Each structure stands twice: as C-alpha cells, then as structure tokens.
Length: 218
Image 1: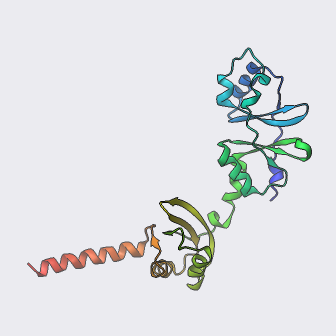
Image 2: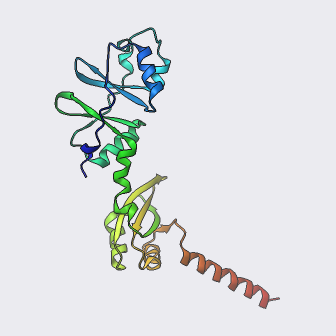
C-alpha cells in the first residue's frame, strides 16, 4: 500500500499571523501533539501543544516563531523512515510536504503503525528469539546464516538494545527447529536472553537430578 493514501487534510495549517488563543482553541478540540504552521503559503514548522499552552494568548504565533519545530516528511518518504520521524520528534502528527515546501496534509501515527502491523514480522506465526553479543563480534549475516542453516525462515531481525558495548538482537523466525536455532546461537557464543520451553524443560530436569543426588547422598 502507498503511504500517500493515508494523508489527511482535515486540519488547515495555522498562518504564522494567527492568534495564540486560536491555536490553543484547536488543541482543545484535538488530541494531536503538534499543529503545522505556514508563512506565505509555505510550511515553516509545527507548534507543539505544550508550547502553545505556555504562550501568552494575547500575542500572535509570529511572536514565538523561534519555537516552531521544523520536522516533516516528503511525499515519497518510505513508511519506515516516516515511523522513525515520529519517534525522533515525539509527535503523533507528521506534516507531509511536496515540492517547494508545499503542505499536502499530515500522517497520523496510528495509520503508519498499521504498516508495521501488516509486516510478516508481526502477522506471521513464528517464534521470537532475543540474543546478545559484543558490538564488535556479531554480524547480521551470521545471525541469518544460523537461522537458515537450521532450515527455518527468518521474518525479521532488528537491534533492540545497545548497552556497554553489547548488542541485543530480536529475531522473528519460523516455528520449526526453534530449539536447534537456540543451541546453535549458543555454540556461536551468543547469549540467549529470551526464555524458551526447551530451556525450562532442561532446567526442570536439572533441578530434579540435583534433588535426586542430594537424596541419594543422605
């Protein structure tokens, strides 16, 4: 699906000459974190809800032009880059621009999230594996090779955490050979963070074995 099908036009951008009290009134009506602002027909940024309520409502938006946030995406921006722009700017509304900074409308965060929800990473049945390794020691090609060498498809992998020179990777894989994949990661010196039924079974057997040893030594 094309992301441009999700462009919404039900909110007109404020002109920079608008009164602050009118801006505040719009935020009272909607749940958006930001509203686009134009000057002479060209997009110049967004005013945030938090800022709008802090401004003197007797003044004009132009008095606070320095506080406008210039984030936006273009008409042909990929959905994943759009999602990143939402995250980086802590916004639930994203202005969409065409040529010459012409405002086309905006995306809603929920609509763009639906693209992610429809990817195989989320909607295909499979298992989740979380592994960890040194930042200089792992490679995506090795991770994919480990999964595919066990005869299982990989639906996606992403870096879910970086801390103290360690990288945590989250994988979505097919259900088959899950235990073999986990054991192969361990052989390749990956620390498996996620819990798996096979591990719980082995832990249970180990605990019972230790209990039996203690009983026999009484």
